[in-house]
Amino acid sequence: MKKISGVPSRKARSTLEQQVEERTRALENMNTALKVLLEKRENDKREIEKRVMVNIDQLIRPYLEKLANSGLNSRQTAYLEIIQTHLNEIVSPFTRNLSIRQWNLTPTEMQVAILVKQGRTTPQIAKLLTLSARTVEAHRRRIRAKFGLARKKTNLMTYLRSI
Figure 1 (cartoon, helix red, strand yellow):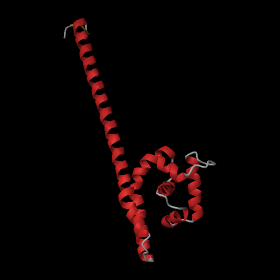
Figure 2 (cartoon, rainbow, N blue to C red; figure 1 turned 135 degrees about the vertical axis):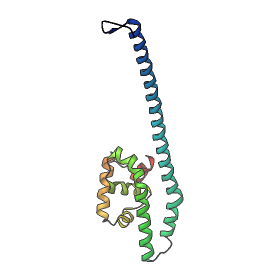
Figure 3 (cartoon, one colour; figure 1 turned 90 degrees about the vertical axis):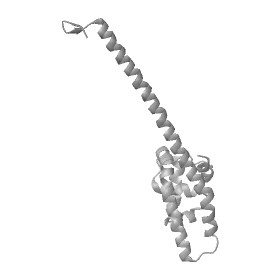
Figure 4 (cartoon, rainbow, N blue to C red; figure 1 turned 180 degrees about the horizontal axis):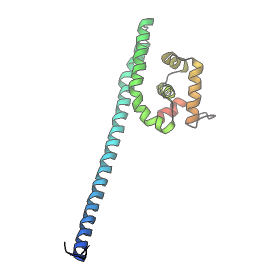
């Protein structure tokens, strides 16, 4: 690079500017490609979460409900409730990723919402989560308020199934 009194020549400056522009374009292209890949990864993650939830709701929960209605003794019922609770805990990170971020539901509200969405009644939810029915009702009221359903006749289960 030719310098006249410490300053690069015009040709040298022009070449440097072109190299900087080329590198800038290359970096912008790489950034765009990375953004596309990250969006794809995020979409794939959401799709997998959705599939897991649908599979559990369609393939596992119906049999757990049939088992619950098959006349189990108290010990078997307790084991079944533990299985259901743990299953809810396993899938709650998926639902937490989707719903808590959007609606700011607490973990217990999320559990109640999941069980309501499954069609469980307040007494059933209370028994499964070892809460009083009044506590479950309070959670349901807070959930309705957070979804903007307070003082509306919209069915909570129907609404939760639609989102």
